[in-house]
Image (tube, rainbow, N blue to C red):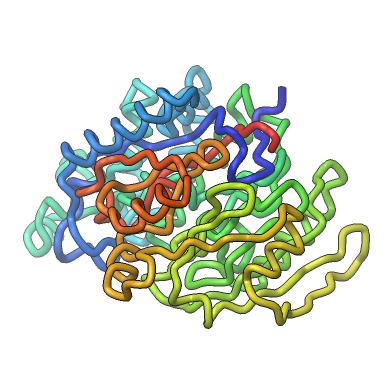
Length: 408
């Protein structure tokens, strides 16, 4: 069986990749929040409890849950050369200060015999105090303190949707928008290229070394023939064209159309899935503020050398109806027609639903206005606690990377 098969947003979810929040969240501090793309500091123990409930709910609904940290550790187990290559790559991507302390970081990380401890330490970051005394800068100790990070934490990792995106049988291994998140793709790279379950079996449609950014929150599999990709704060239009060409070039891919959604460039709308997600065959949740702002472009060109790009002048509903072939499309507004509720709940990812079967979605409990509207429309709404997880500005879809879905 293929290790990856995701042809829709709504097919019954069979296997998903998560990352349980770890020590990296406790290494957030006020001075680093902006740089590390956070607005607040989640309380780790509560965030872990919320995340554990998320994983438990998925299992209760027949989903196999696997963890990024476990797959990465399995990949390195018993392969010292691969372990060394992984450590060197992590350090190389960790910024200028890490290069100054490269030898010390390498020795420190190599000293960890347990692969999972090694993986989790690369995720949580390394401070000057953890390095051997011999390698420390005395001036740095006196002027910056031993709590200074020589390798930053990666607190955004629990949003597993962004570093790579599954498209049919393949993967877009992404080039992240921010330097802060650039190392997150390393784990996916090693898993996809070297883990025995994936190695040699998964085509890559995008790679981190490509020059323009693309993130998984902007990639939605509308059906096996149609891919939606956001042009957003985090994904550049050039990236969408490269992705389209590479998907079209895969003879086993059935995607023949990419719909590029040009959405406002802002932190509130950082990805397409923060304003638009699929609930069922022909039902979507949408943030109403984008309805008059989004522009949609159809990209075709499968089997041809050049892409054809044309702007769609029709409404969002009409465009979706034309490509989904499921009858009239219903757009359910986040927050309904209450402007304040809409803005508040979109900020807390009320539009970011994870569909685990047609008409069944996982959502944050705090977005009660939207949740009641969804339930009233006949959607099976499964809620998870979200007081701490939501501080990272991502919802259930952001926190999950489906690996296997049943065909619709």
